[in-house]
Length: 228
Image 1: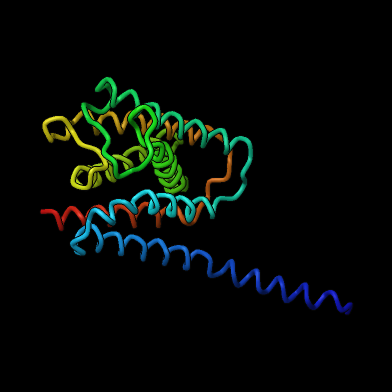
Image 2 (image 1 turned 90 degrees about the horizontal axis):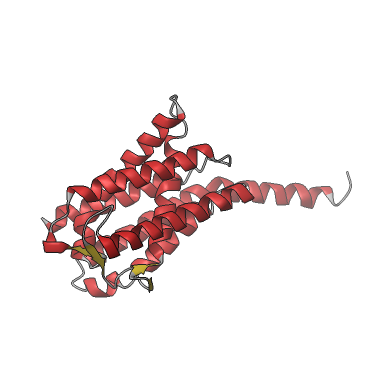
């Protein structure tokens, strides 16, 4: 056996071990970061400091999610660009006209804004559509029903997100009332973006997706319980 074969086999074993532990490690980082965020926002007595870390939390979550994506093809990049732009521009329209979601404005927590909307909002739409799209992909149903299921998952997380967002200055609603139009608008836009997800041909088996969704969902549910 040539001498070069043994190092190659050893390298393959190392890579295999790293791949084996990549998902558990990523999930652990995701959970720890959200547990710290929960403690910081709800129990530390220093919520303003932890609010300022919200963009970092969102960027880290995206890095963990898309770090497990395979196949960075032109079609996937087109999908991502369209979802990012559609989500961001829908929020711009919503903030300036009250259409789609209702009358609301963004606070300072989510960072740098363009046209009164945080740039990270487009990334948040992309993360949620991509994660829920991967989650429903294995359902043994027609693609349109998958799109509807994905849109419902987005509305569920928004339902628990809204009170948290208002409390911690993500955004605020006119007269402090979250209108029904917000959830209708979320479902409508989510459905369109999920149809786009279903019709685009790219790799859709991201194992990190359900962890991102459910960790965030539990995070918002826990904060809701704390706020009551």
